[in-house]
Length: 326
Image (tube, rainbow, N blue to C red; front, side, top):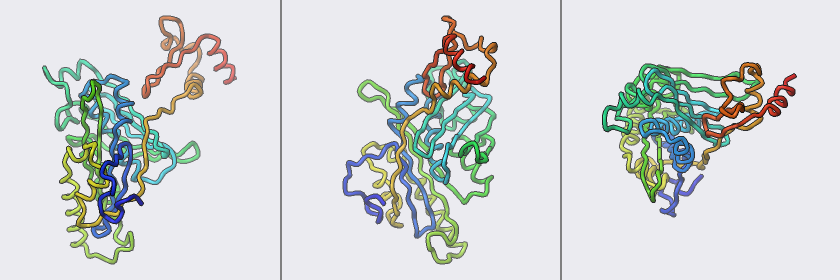
């Protein structure tokens, strides 16, 4: 467990914990949870694409939601969150490996986005999901390899925020009662943009989990309502404060119930693309059908949507790729 696992704040108030998940448990309330905060990883992923603010902020929120949901599951592979819609933002994709590698990208229509935002507006409005995504769906996929069946959960985009959409998923599934709060912000410091996003999730544990003695349903309901109220009391300023350690934030919110805090797990911005992967993609396409991928130089050019790395293929490279497929 981390310092402060007995419910007290950490001894080092200058400790920072961005790009980490901090799991915790409120034994007295029969509730478990996690605090996720992303910072430098968002800078590395979002800023390289130059997305408009109204696209970048939903992507930041989607990435922290992905990390929240992924770290609440036991799996060995890749957890993917995908949002599709018929609005200005057509697609958001973000995924997280069990090793902590996170990435994400967006596809959008610039003209539709300008119309949806109106003159002089640049940021995503509050309750942006209907305006920016339109009608669509949110899908969660867990891929544990070729020899394991993929799990997928799909829900319609119902709600004003991505947190609302996640709540729809939990209500429609057989999961335990769950509450999620998400926030993201872009700041300008030292002439550069810096992103921070955070999510706080609480989830009711099974009745006899963690050695709790039997508690009647009315008491369980009261305990759950208390946990939700305390979670909701976290402010955006607290959740995104770079000078406020997560351990201290949890103590502020839940100190009466002595939160047990567990070992943090780190995240990092890392793409999984490689030339070998692109080779396999090309081998799945007939060579005579590559004309659409050729650039002005006559090279077959493939760009990774996630990290913007370009892979260029001359004719000799294509000979190698298709010879290995023979």
